[in-house]
Length: 128
Image (cartoon, rainbow, N blue to C red; front, side):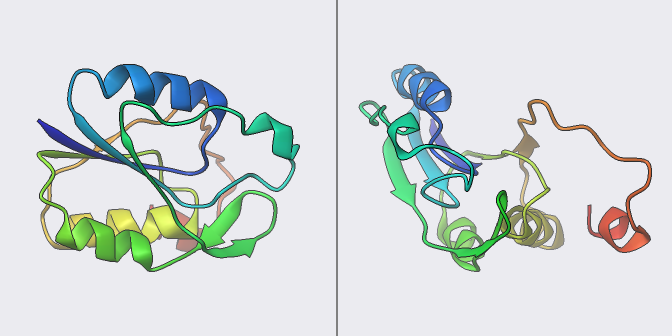
């Protein structure tokens, strides 16, 4: 089975998870950016061993957001059996989810720790 996973940055705990998951499927992980803005570079010490890793270079927006159209392009050309989206909070994720939704491509969310804010603007709620 081919799996395409879109994730925000290569955190070591996720690299460990993806290395284990990659033993069970043909896994490609797209990282939207090489790091989080508030992380020490030494935080990123783990390496991919059992999965294909693609790190995108996107426009940084604040500490935790980014923008790149490359996510859409990768999804568009993917032959994966399943596409997993990390979430919908970054502009890149919003673009990816919007593309999947409009083209009726099945996908799943794997969201950990995200809390929806009741005070979000109607614009953000509409996009999500």
